[in-house]
Amino acid sequence: MSANILIVDDEPAMTDLLAVELRRAGYRTRVASSGEEALSILDADTIDVVVTDLRMPGRSGTDLCRAIVQSRPTIPVIVMTGFGSMEAAIESIRAGAYDFLTKPFPFEKLKVVIERALEHAAIRSELHRLRRQGRELPGLDALLGASPQMERVFALIERIAPTDASVLITGESGTGKELVAQALHRLSRRSKGPYITVNCAAIPEQLFENELFGHVRGAFTGAERDRLGLLRNAHRGTLFLDEVGEMPASVQPKLLRVLQEGKVRPVGADTETTIDVRMVVATNRDLAQDVAAGTFRADLFYRLAVITIPMPPLRERGDDIILLAEHFIDQLADAAGRPRPELSDEAIAVLMAYGWPGNVRELRNWIEHAIAMVDGPVITADHLPGAHLRATPPAIPTAITTRTLSQPHRQAQPVDTAALEPL
Image (tube, rainbow, N blue to C red):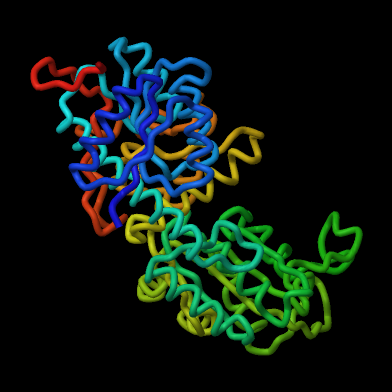
């Protein structure tokens, strides 16, 4: 079915003229003489694009644009103005308008902008579809995705979570390795037990054994009471060792013995204590290479890596970049008590073109920056902290949608010849 265009202008001659030309071009049309009438039509009919005059009695085109962006963010709004001022244009774009045209303009110009607006709307619909279809594991609001890479991760998590197998999670920093560990715990039979996490790189070597195995009173100077340690605290639950490749060599054989025998001997103790702990570890290093180099024990590596879950870098996850960005916008705008802004096409292009060395963690940081900087309903490329990285504006990849999106003109120039003029 052809697209349905709503034309809003208080000059009947203008709405009639545009309606005739648009129908000749194959579009369906509805007309309204005021912002209030336009909103009533939007409530009653399915509209694909709104073309509105800027200056009208009552609700102005800018006010109408704001109302549409808030209630129907996937419908692009094209603003017409006979005043040609940059101030009016900037105001309409800040209000969320897709584009603006200065009267008089040739009909072909309007037709081109409408076609681009429809492509823009197709992308918005695709993003909303991805947000609906993107999988999300229970209670883990940032571990979501619709890409094949993340589908494989989800399938692995669901398959191995009910088991007690040790798991090694690999991947670059910021890819969500700790979220995977949390998911394995929450989806396991141990979910009601403790979940203990420790960053191996954050514990000094001389304290590592004490932190992991605990101690008994009097084990050393200052040990005035018993300390359970992380392993015993995680009894009947899950212990997550992040950055396990940083574990001191002196501790590795002692942890191996715990994994082999299911028993732990606190520092200074004469007896061992039986424990039931599932081990999940993560690293951004190549542990197999560390084994070959002799810096990580091979037998411990094989005990820990019964199952390996590789986390893909964000740059390889395609549409998940925008899916996650939209999710973080929802989350952070709500936390800030602000209306939810939309991503502009240029902002989407920047997000898709960037390499994301910091992965999901860096993306969240960018969106938090944008939420703090934006002062209207649309996040533009200039609101993103990586704006300085753009030598030339990148095109939006076709991975977002099956249609190629041309970058919209934000400053359509007036044309005096063969132009449409209000009668």
